Length: 411
Length: 87
Image 1 (cartoon, rainbow over the protein chains, first blue to last red):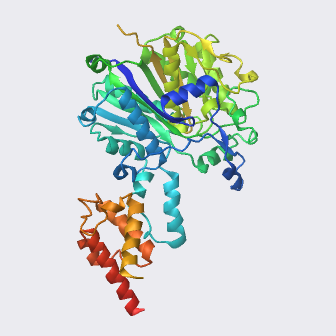
Image 2: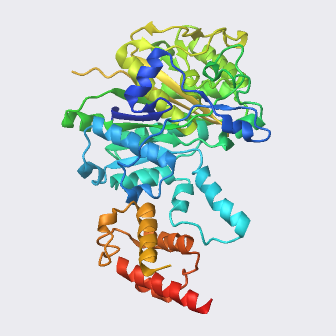
């Protein structure tokens, strides 16, 4: 069976830098941090991390109330990101309704704010009388994908991967496979996350949330740095519009990049601790899928969240497979860990680097930790031609994933 | 509460919840066709009215037959008067 080539023809982002891919890229290029002090987190007993990278206020009114009523913030972010991706890809409402465009968008969990609203009444009054009709649609695990499809009138396939930090990397990968197999011609792929203190608490409980920079929020997280002290939770949404190459060529739209490889593997060694060998296998499998050798990768966008164990394991895995030749950076220092959105948001930034011929360094990497020294860290902006890049995401639950991208040269 | 005050509270509560334009909130407005309030909105409408007036109406049979905003006005006015009479 002849597989179809899969390209990216649209991108959309909601990030701690605001609305739009341009806002994200401009801030990354300036070396800005989206991390802020969140004093309310200090009011929660036992929570030591008081920082987060939150999306600035966004007016969601362009989404009609009929659709918005079933959306929590994460679905609003995802829908607005889809608007941007579809606009760039010049995809019409008719295409959305034509059955050949699918949605592959996930989140770590459904809306915890909505769950809190439900349980506030349920636990205090033991009644359901004040529960509004659309609360469940914000709580269900496929809330983002379903809301996007409803709001955009999409009639193709719908899939909602949920694998925490690997969510949107897997979403892009599954969308890529769907299109390569010819099951869909387009797919909106990505993830979304809305901040809730429970996310920070999840990491803080296992001593993996940053807590020593509450008074200097822009200095954390610190991927690969010797003074790193954990994750900074964030929110947003990243979405890419995947399309078969033949469809994109037929329509004459601008092709932004090509997806050429994907791998995802389970690491059953531990629910929380990263495993270097599994990470290496994941990257190897992705390159096998892409039919590339390690020497053909010119940039690695690391998962590196700023945790002690994760950054070390990823450095070692990269070194074992790629040596110390390939430039590596993590964008978590700029935007924190946007969890389910991180794969797609960082993929979008990686695509811009490939197109622009520049590489964005890791923010807050002042002193490389000795355990991470074995790879080629980007410490400053570099001009460099990148033909192919790999994007990693490694998640709780032992869900590892990697995507391989290639520049697309127009005829 | 006068009937006018009741109508004003109904209209302002529904306008806020459902982002309706006050100019469209005429008694003859049909909930589904004119105000675009569907079956999910009708569930929430009951909660909004219960919160606004402090009564329970969810199980009232008459609710199911409401078609227009005027029907809501009349239903709530009757309900309030009945409660006042039996208080």
